[in-house]
Length: 507
View 1 (cartoon, rainbow, N blue to C red):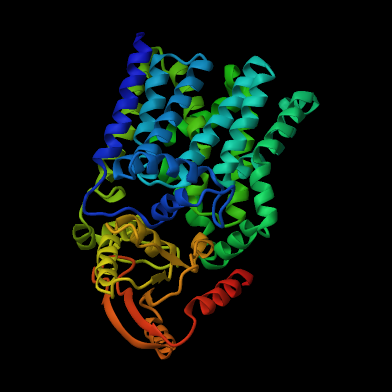
View 2 (view 1 turned 135 degrees about the vertical axis):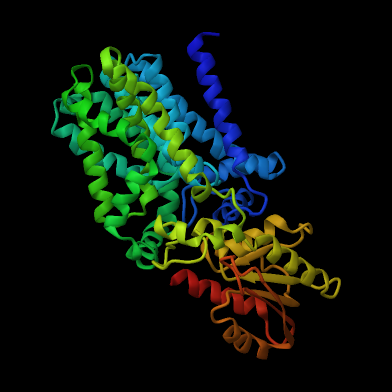
């Protein structure tokens, strides 16, 4: 084993250890994770909110037993692979050992530590952005057509994971057109590789077509309910914050591709970043959508700094650049990760508020960061629903309908009685109702807002109805969520639900 391989192996090991050490038992899984895990039971070429790739990983996790260890393993793996690609990019650009260590350190102690904590498409998205940039760099370094086909395959997997990767292409194409690398558009292999990519993503496109392109409905809903609250200025400020420990390296990369001779052939990457960030800013994108841009620039900047900081007084800047990401990691450790209990964070909310970490999708500040609040109350909810379910008459058929996908997914994940299957009119659960058997009992899990209205609206159709319990954790985003029980219906519940499902789908 060479010295470089040994060092890289050490960084990979450190990556996995840090990811697992940052898991705090005070917190449950996050609401999105429950939805993605449930998709393993409903494999398809597409879903209302995301493409199919995450469901494939969920299927593997389910095969391994659905334990939290495996839920957290795959985002950590994708993060480690992203770091490996940055390392390989530095090697491709003839970076020295210091450049390799600098790039790996900046990757290890970055926002990816937090992103890779959650089983969401984001970790794979960042990996695919980095791999696609790497493939383009390899092509322009070697001018071998195989890298165009590799880039096409990477794009296809990125697209089947999260449509966000389209923004990379939106930035890359005009950047190539305005630089000397525009000659690529005369290469027939470019168009053949595009055809390959189209073939690979066609099953998902066909699914979108057959289902009325729900991605556009999802984007419209996202824009109306969440992105409208996103400040363009906040988006740009977050870009600095995500890789704040590596900020000098990223700045160095932008200088290097413009003025440093060995890297000037990659000048298009300067404009690619600009075009992509401008596009994201225009559409009021969430800040984390753009994280995939930066790993490849850490590689470029590390190569440049490794070359220019070799002699004279500048050599003393080497340990400084390595120390910066470590210092910022230590400073942000307690506010950026779930290492403190919810109660401890609530007592220090002012510190989080100053960093903008308490701002939720609704544009308002709350007691905990949204991701943290989204990891509370789920076990409590599932346990209470299971208690209610088990207390109903034996031999009767019970349907559990929730207000949102987090509630349904958490119940399905945490309950011990696997006969319990919760659904919702929200997200993909609307397609997963099983109404083949007559419904005798109806459990309704309802958000705090409007919960009493639900009780008044539904109880007249049942001979017995009552409020069974609620989520009592005041720091949970689901605080106040109520569990209603309706028994002995006076109507055909299934028929009514079918009508509601069709109405919701048309809406």
